[in-house]
Amino acid sequence: MKSFTRNLCLSLVSVAILGGTALASPANLPDFDQVSKDNDRVISKHEAVQANIPAEFFLRADQNHDGVLQKEEYDKLKAEKAPETAAK
Image (tube, rainbow, N blue to C red):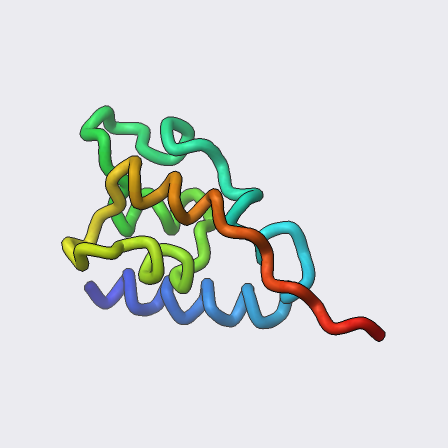
């Protein structure tokens, strides 16, 4: 759990720093099968960290709060549109 918390913090800092980059949009995440590599049909926290999925995305997508993402949860996340950025 310590490692996940550390990686969660690093992911949040990365998102804050990278803000407007491609990773800021859930639509740009890799496909489910590219992330869930152990054929258990879920994405674990460890797999999410390995795939550089921001912790914010993982926590938002885990709708049943079981600590893993089912394909339906992940696909719903990927279907989200990127937040609108303010006109400069």
